[in-house]
Length: 129
Image (cartoon, rainbow, N blue to C red):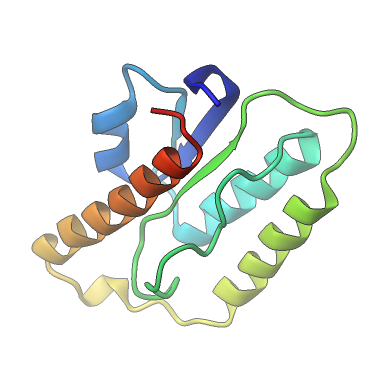
């Protein structure tokens, strides 16, 4: 897979900083759950998930950042597996009460790095580097 075959949807400024020039990055300053909803809307348009929406061991209520790989191109059919994964992620996210408003700026930087590392691993696994 090459960089012309995927998009990255993220709310992580570190991902934008590292990948914006060479990759198709869609950056929004929105919540974790809103990123999931953005991805769901794109799946309804015909995109497929290329990375799991709940990857990593950090719970949705612990981190404000999420980066997800989707296909760049749209398919004629709705991908039901992608839709099921993203809908389940949205439901899981809704079960948590967010506590990110209590973090220091250093903690936010740490969470950006964790999300970046997970995305980087996903890019390597998808062989898009």
